Image (cartoon, rainbow, N blue to C red; front, side, top):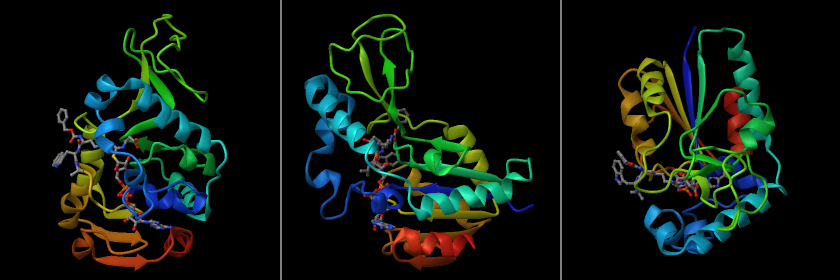
Length: 228
Ligand code: BV8
């Protein structure tokens, strides 16, 4: 059975209404990533970081998965019949749209917006409301909660399993990512020598030259077509 690894980025959630990061109206055109997506920014001004993630957590409640998310859930179903982990979906996104579309085996390498982490006891409670410096950890009561996401300079999650899956895959598909942020941006290089590589994106990414196959256009049209 062919083994397929899929990597998604913010572009797959764009047509659900969530902004990407580096497009002209992207998240980083409105706020400096150094201020809201680094440990240093959190230490300097935690209230600004709380507000940044509270806004994104609130907007997540008003958006829904799109046809691209659903197509990947259907693809997992088709592979799922074969138990030997032939299908892996890695996402750089911290939204829950893949899960809401029906995907089960989702690896959030940059963490999850709907989860917090307690800096006192390490608990990672699921969280849909706002979080401020006064919010108490449901486990230990400490007012020491932060978003459970990976900031710049922090180690992405599940890297050992990710590298192993890429090393063993026959097909690697990158969807809706500018291939700017490492280590995810380096995954295509890891796959290109032994796997068939595919880029599905609105426009060619910085790594477009590495792919064996590509289709450009909105994810809701190119992803279902690829999955068929
Ligand atoms: C780390 C989470 C080390 C929170 C984010 C070389 C090697 C290793 C590291 C580095 C390196 N060089 C530099 C670094 C450091 C840094 C980095 O990569 N910097 C960049 C800016 C150069 N990397 C890190 O710090 C990483 N950590 O390396 O740790 C380490 C080792 C040991 C011990 C400790 C540490 C951590 C990186 C993770 C940072 N967190 N987010 C949050 O979301 O708030 S990253 C941020 O960018 C986003 O979250 C997103 O996940 C990520 C990638 O962005 P994309 O998803 O690609 O989005 P983008 O807007 O860029 O592109 C959208 C694409 O969609 C475009 O191509 C567009 O054309 C397309 N599109 C638009 N509309 C559509 C569409 N496609 C289809 N349909 C549409 N409708």
